[in-house]
Length: 302
Image (cartoon, rainbow, N blue to C red; front, side, top):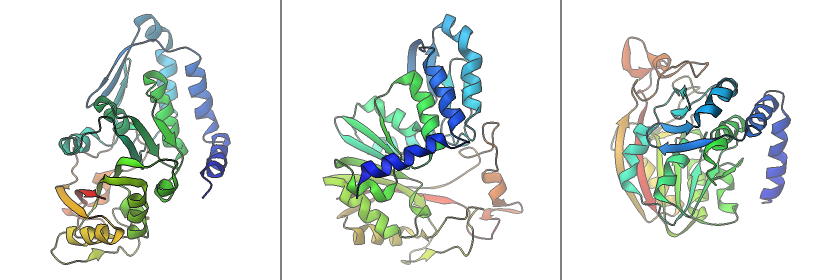
């Protein structure tokens, strides 16, 4: 697979009519030579700006950020601007944080969105971080934030299917909230397995259903109003997928029901959110009548 050719093709999206204004706004912002006094990689990724710079360019910063709706993962604070994202992503990150150590490792985040988790990972001083996500909008959001942080993170407009062909292997791969979007989950897990170094670890979360049987839910049309949800396994079925993909160990880290504190509608998205996806008369069901979203978190070892 020629990844360089794929990269060239995907860079053409920078000229799309809905993306080109975003790129131009980020380029304009970069020309102001942002003056950052400090940044904090905590629950809210916060950038403190030089006061004179902030006074001069805060409106430009806000206008640029608002061009990029919807903001899904975060939150972020740039100067006086608070981007109150749909997901309070620190809840998931803090749940997983005790289960990994990234110091000196080569790390990938598959389906990295705007890079929130990757920015958080910087505090553990990995050797390298590579993000994979084919969404040009999310890439632009990342570039906006990274205009201030200058992280050194490598963001690739590539997908999970490209991971095994990447120019280097990874010690740790994160794949959070991606697997249920794949029509061939075992094939996707095989690609992640091949992308890891020997002894490497995959940290993954996906939707799940309760039960001890080795089965999965296959929604007829949509799940929580989302069209591209294909398979929702029991924990045992997910473990079996991992073993079939080649992983030798699978550790259950956590099971957690998604709630309205973690995912909710804010002014920074222009669409519906979890509250709209649930049965108004029974929060334990989706609007389609399926079990409400619950996630399983695992670590799988190659």
